[in-house]
Image 1 (cartoon, rainbow, N blue to C red):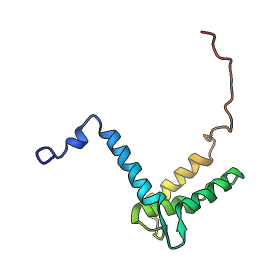
Image 2: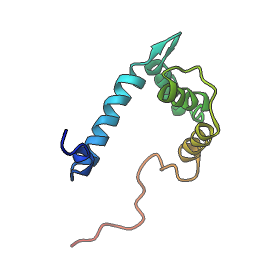
Image 3: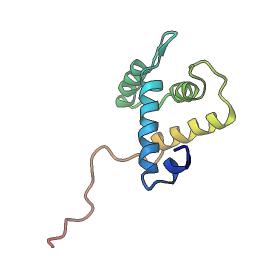
Length: 112
């Protein structure tokens, strides 16, 4: 790596490395976040229960996760970008693109 520092990014496997690195970061920083009375795993469980009962995704949860990613704390002033991204996430999870609860079959499977 000293001779060719960009070797990691130039590799055909760089996407996998980035994905694994991102998952590692998510697990270490977000899933394990438990500070000042805010525990990610508890919040996500609460949100899952609320979603099951028909509630919408809580924008405060999305913002808090964005703040932890950005600053390491749930207490940050979200910038315009973070607010826009939170809105996009909410639109994807509550909008018309949301999948049906069970698969629907519109035509019978082919016999081939």
